[in-house]
Image (cartoon, rainbow, N blue to C red):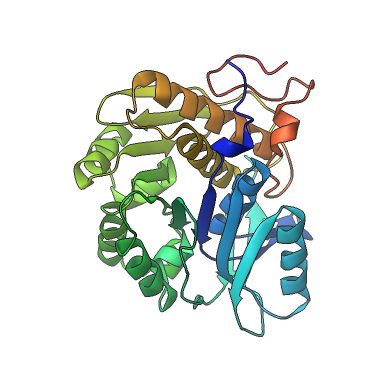
Length: 313
């Protein structure tokens, strides 16, 4: 099966969440990239062909201007609150390519408008940090029938209060969302000593239709009430892991929205998982949060695979 390329199958997606300038520290040498988990998801979705609006909170400083240019070049429409300074995160790259973060951020976005969006995504700091977290929760709880939603907690322990508070917030939001993705680190933090398969069971009990746990080089666990399976990770040379989970989230939403999936069978789950692994793999092979454009995955380079797992070459 070939890639989904018909623009009519794409949809308007609204993303609610923070924009952060990642100050990447590699052995004392610093470079800056536009990031923030929801912002990265917005960019990933736009590059995969969706009409995307990002409701966020960017400053009027030089970093904020750089962020606006980044979003414009990736075809993301931005609505932002007014602030003086754009949030930052120092990302220190570890030996395995993972990153440890130190944040300077507040979160107080404008009240979003649904407009023509068929799907709403949120997560990370935006779902937990007051006062913006209350805006996010109220909006998700008010979505009309037929509009789907997704959540990626992307846990930042230093910013989200106690474990009990964070778990309550997460499960409250998960219970009103169609799709939830966690990393294995998120799952361990939220549900200590619980196997990922049991975490997936809990999400499905809360009412989630599609539950995904990403496990780095070990691939993805993808589940619905009808089926579950493991999907291997893409084989790539790792530059760093910044934005890889966000790219996977974008790919999951992309395939979910395009397919209009009513029945999440094993075949549907395999398509979603394979597409997420492919898109995340490309991002992991690059420095910073730099997800692929759909045209790159359609090229002759052999970089990607179609959502059913067949070669794109």
